[in-house]
Image (cartoon, rainbow, N blue to C red; front, top):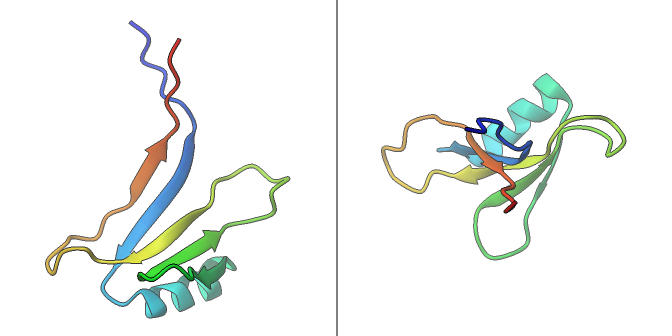
Length: 80
């Protein structure tokens, strides 16, 4: 059985106050964060230069009123 998971390609951080979370990550980790212009509360996160190893992601407003703090990670799956 192959237990190898593909590389994580995107992450999402839910936050009750995404503007405050974006400011925190900008200052703490020097991330570039820009508000998505698509009609919903979503901030695109660039964690570093494209030539450097790593992944980019997003900060989003909590979808549920009591959604716990979590980190959602996405894998790219391919068929063999």
